[in-house]
Figure (cartoon, rainbow, N blue to C red):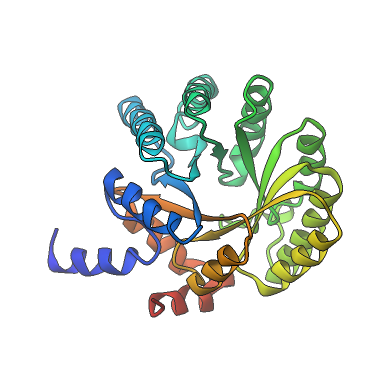
Length: 282
């Protein structure tokens, strides 16, 4: 790695644990000391080569074992297209189920991340099929998508666990909300539905308004509510929430694909000020 690469990685470490699996375990242990749980993700998506999919699944298997042996407090997150969906639904489902089963025996929860719009139906289908026999798994839902209110009702009815995010993928015309105000408005509506109908869920946001509304609902509810934030974005607030006794989880990516992830963070126009500010925060 050249000088430019080393400088880029130093900046990227604001948002990622590092390049290898040991970096992830080390950073997870550090966060755990501050009562911050983790959601560890091995970076990568849109993988169409079977050998790379196999490598990814093996990496998650090793990660699960290391989290168990290291007594790491947290969960993992997998992306459908990194474990086979870019090849076939069957390969994706098989790998997803095998990861969830291994994690279940290790006492670890598995989040199924949501990707771009074309993958939504297959992602939810695989989740609901897996949920029937494995309760240690949840799914990410994006308020950017117009369909998400319907999906929340359907998943909550079947006892699923949802992590609500705003979404960072491309606009898709009438299928998505394409302005910040509309995405935010739908986030609040989706949150309201979760408090009404879901048993357990995660509010993943750095937005003060969203967090304020969630706290207001929580005071009048006996729901099991978790909160999620990205590594490096508003770390002081995350630490305060953890110290205040909130069930807080830090999304903690690692891996060789750190550059692509970091570029996406920097391109998030709706969160540009937060992202840029995070570069200079300790």
